[in-house]
Image 1: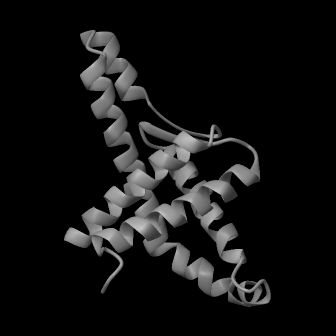
Image 2: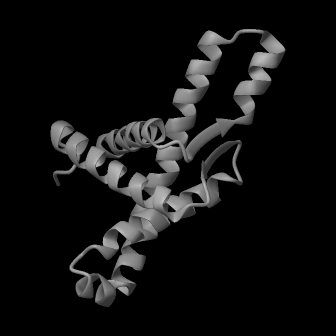
Length: 142
């Protein structure tokens, strides 16, 4: 259970850094703007809302990577072998698009612009950050 929570935190951090670097990634919440409009509190409510939004999208991304990605990786094994593993980046980008689609049904909306390269660059950034953070925290060990 502890490693799952650490993985969600790492996913949230990686998504935040990727959206900070790439202008085509955006996470928006309808609940944050409604809370600010009704209470008039901007700083604390908005910050907590953004942090929770990234953690929520990190949770969705973790579930997608846990359940969908192994099946897609297995089915695309021949093309992954032909490209010497580079097709894995395309699979990661597809998992980001799937996360974006799933989040459209929630109050937290994770959007990727229409360019495929934004998702590919985001997948590379998220993979590198997850790799480093996983090594530092020991979450990648089993």
